[in-house]
Image (cartoon, rainbow, N blue to C red):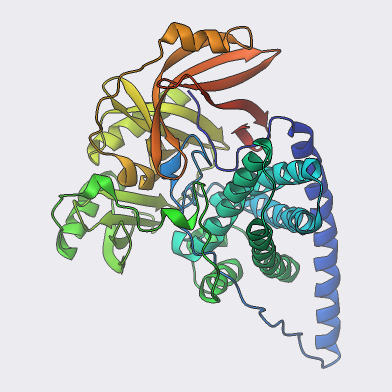
Length: 497
């Protein structure tokens, strides 16, 4: 079983995706030439006694939403993670550079299509544009997640891009159901376009002003003076009011105030205990200089934020929940530049680490390999049923054979002892709804997110049709088709439409 990504691609958008990539490659060359021209102009001004032009910040509008991978499969499924996703797992300078410039390109493309959505009156055209924005936001999230920028320094940026994708999915489903977009929907699209335009401005300024000799490896050092890190810090601090958006979507503000079910009833730990837990969890990393660098408060998952260095001085950062002392997320920013171990070994390493930090009863449901890092998504298992809301994302460096990151937010929000459900519809009856459409290769029961906060027991069917693979979910209580996802292989990884 494979992961359901945030920003699911419409199944008829493979050509759009390729077109976007080609356009981004062209745009990247244009930006590089523009940047070179700007540098030459600045050097000429300096030689003639002039001063560098100062760019004023227009102000960043932060999207106040709750981003969690909690609503994994249906809706906006299996997001990259709030913490990229999540999320920032370093590979090498070439990957960092490519990811940054492609991020700029995708945000540019989102800006164009959001502006068109605001003025379009044709529902068929709107459907196409909504699909393209979802493609672009999905790929932007992927690129953003690979940048070695601290989670707290890209928090609102990740949240906003994910919310754009989720809201576009919500609008697309309204149109599919024969509804039309309301004045409120259009107003929200305008607000999102305004936010995206601001993000585009800052990223474009940054790409133009990067010095020709900038080494993207410096991102891995995490120094505050780094130009990219500084810009993302600016985006986090330049926040103004942004309207709350309540809609039936995974990243809507309607999910705010939700409870971290897994932590209910657990005792609160002290700062000293959090440091001891950190040392225990990362004992194999030769950690030194363990330091409490902050706390997150007022959230459903309150955490102690800790940092340390390994034997080579490379930083490890982690969040330990105040209740129960659970590992919420961590990033290991050491470069991973080779693939010495295979996927099966990577999976064994991931599962041993999960056992060590206290996460059990899990099953790998999706594995992808990006560069020299393999990403494995685990879902909870309850009475033999896969629970997609209970998701943990693990990254393993294939060079050193160690876990380089974890994101367990979804699991902590959703894992609980559920009432056992019994299917009203038989597997054979559900299968009849699917047979003929795909060549079924596997089927099983699963708990999947449904709407904003509900869950559904469903039959999951995986199979092939005309050379493409699909996942089809049939509600095990009503027999209704819940959703269909198409597996799309691309240079950016594997996506589901």
